[in-house]
Length: 368
Image (cartoon, rainbow, N blue to C red):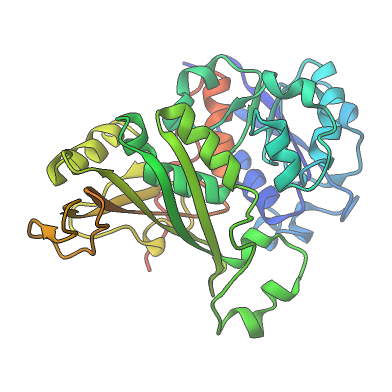
């Protein structure tokens, strides 16, 4: 039985991710959301920015400094853009509050990679070692002991979950190519050309091709998990969805690894995970996880290509590589705002506070 009711603050609560944080915290039995900070809608009820929260509770947006927001709370969930988020963290930590940061500022140990892909100088690199990467499927024990969490990006979460079983077995090496299709909510609440409905609803187009900022994050995490000589070519695509992210990653493993071995690796790695499913009668899909903190992963295993002739050996249908390897097409799907954002942050918060990690996150979403 949990004796203490923890106090929380959402800092940067007017965006889509902030709305999901607020929604999940308002229904949390062991954490009380005591304040929501924002520079928008100051003094107005949270329902002004999030119509689904109209009259749910008498909370208003407040304009607060980082220190004011963090004072007297146990945990602060930080939903600000990169660089801006990092500039607020020192004052938050000075109050003794735990921090869960949803920006990209503290996800990578490689500062040079951060500065290259985010095109900015890191404002406080000395704080990076204090943060644990908040992917429970990889770092659950470290998250439990942490006071600072860097919650993963949505593309990163999706792609890493799809490739992680291969990395943990030491099978993932060399170049991986990924195509990821994402919903418009991933671009934030402010209207942009890329999220304008008349264009987005009837279109598919790529953006940040081979330069997406989650690329070095993915490589760093998978390398830590056991991948070797890894490089990633990532092509993000704007999809005509409000929410959801679907990634298709093409990896090559040694020819000696059988198709059954690969499927067993996925089943075994995720067997005890509360929020990652490996469907048995179908492949992953967005509609099955949208609106929930669940993710789905799976793979299609190709035949082996012989090195000497390039001729296919085996009975599969997939196109081979001609280099004595087996092609594994890794598929993964999740809701970019929940498992790819606010829900995962709360999952890590639960672990950090010694709570059941599934608390306030167990609803399965809707179908269709």
